[in-house]
Image 1: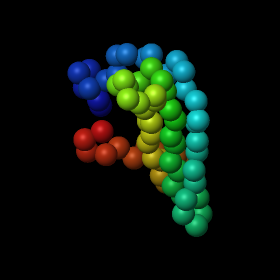
Image 2: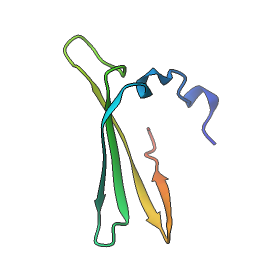
Image 3: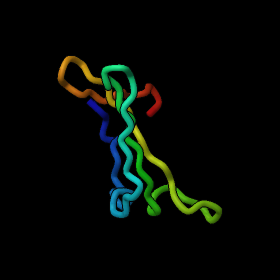
Image 4: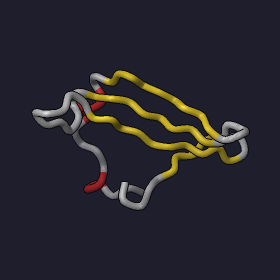
Amino acid sequence: MIPSSDRISAFAIFEDIYNLNIDFNGDNQEFAVITWNSKNGFTDDKSEAFTYGFTLQKDKNIWKVNFMPMQ
């Protein structure tokens, strides 16, 4: 379970999603990378958008999220 202190609280980053991409890789399409951009994300004066993403791995017929240790 994800501790409350590590959970997202500002959902504005999801209000203007664009460039949503799903890329499959692997011979049997057992991996997928989901990426998107958001202008309400963590930006500074020099950048226009932030790219978010995560990966999925297929286990039998169930897609599971791959979490990185410091994500």
